[in-house]
Image (cartoon, rainbow over all chains, first blue to last red):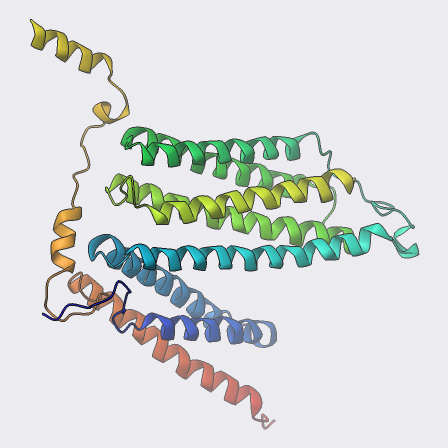
Length: 261
Length: 82
């Protein structure tokens, strides 16, 4: 068998970019069909295809790295750059919503009563559940760091414990936030306050769910002995993403919950 | 005597893994052998029959979905006769 004379990864032909693109097509046109013709079939097909694509594509990456050894140091460097660039793009995504919030809240219009929070809006007390949520995410940042050190020190049991705790804290945050959403005295339809609050915190919550899922996959991989003390980039990527989610929350808390009340 | 002392030490360190009923075995070396076999199969099918079935289902959904989108968009674009 011919051996390559370089350390880079020439991937096998893969169908997943195509299926992923078709999933995007189906979801977007499905959304339009839902709005205009009251049918969710197309959108559901798109979602199913998206989930299938994600599962198989990431499964293949794990095979290529952990089982086939293709993730050499230069390849890993590329993966690191990729993850950093992706998180950077997400930072810009959230920046937009923070811009919207500050645009409306720094100079509240007469229609809002010339004040922020607008007249009639009862904001959530920042020192109740939102403060607890802050503590929960900060604690999860500590536990994910504990998990990382445990991986590097070959402490299998501690890694599993710390990672499990991190995921549980993530679920706890999501549950608390869901309860807050249910109990809130204002809705997304309550003017620009409602819009900025629920869109910014809503997208953040979605990212907490994505991050928790990523960590859960890492937990399964850790249990199955995929990670070594030297090579565990999947976990590092999940940890970076988790810290990003934590930092976004801190900005949300200080801007919208605290200053914005 | 020493052996008993050592066993006692292990038991006193009893935590999560030893109370688990079955230990997860490290199957990574087997997987490495399977996925490094020189059989020309691409990585997305190299895991076995399950891979092929899932791939076929995914591709069927892709083709059907594309066809359905074209149909829906075409019918939305063409004027409907009353």
